[in-house]
Amino acid sequence: NAGVTQTPKFQVLKTGQSMTLQCAQDMNHNSMYWYRQDPGMGLRLIYYSASEGTTDKGEVPNGYNVSRLNKREFSLRLESAAPSQTSVYFCASSDYQTDTQYFGPGTRLTVL
Amino acid sequence: RKEVEQDPGPFNVPEGATVAFNCTYSNSASQSFFWYRQDCRKEPKLLMSVYSSGNEDGRFTAQLNRASQYISLLIRDSKLSDSATYLCVVDTGGFKTIFGAGTRLFVKA
Image (cartoon, rainbow over all chains, first blue to last red; front, side, top):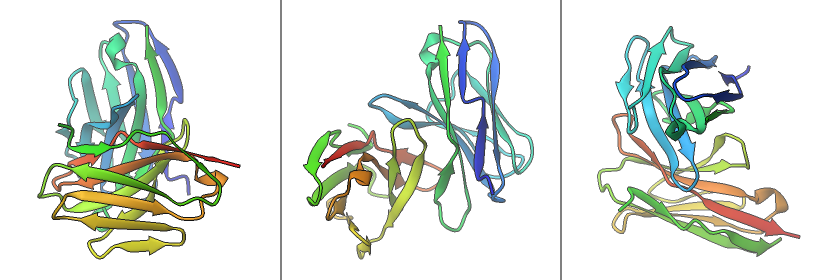
């Protein structure tokens, strides 16, 4: 039982490049989330998906897009990376009953 | 004012010490409360949920004061393995979960 997996673990991009961060969960959770974590600021919600087929903006959605491909997978896309998007990105999932969020190991992204 | 505020620390304590962390939140309509633990360069993991009546899990005790809008975490008999960052988390419903910036704890031998 892998829980929440993310790929890649590390990535370096140049300004203007695009990339997609992948996330998958095997816990049959309905809800999935993308966060970014910056020093001293805590985790901030980028986008979330309450259930398969729906996505909504979080606190900091600008510069990102998401796709809920199926119940298991939720991807995050940076269309034109900027240095301000240098961060650690975490994917999480949860079920309705407990509200507990389970996190993936994170992707460390650097934009030069 | 941040929606969830924590003392960033770091707290440096010897093994065996008791240490307490506080967290305040601004939204009085908040519904669920949690403490997460995050080790260096790792993902956050749930430590415990926080209930109005208070709850205990081994050496860890969590308290909620809705009137004053604060949450606390008490760690007794600190172990070296307790060294981590502790995140206060508040859920206001509607998929709006707010994470505090965290309090760093270092437990020394």
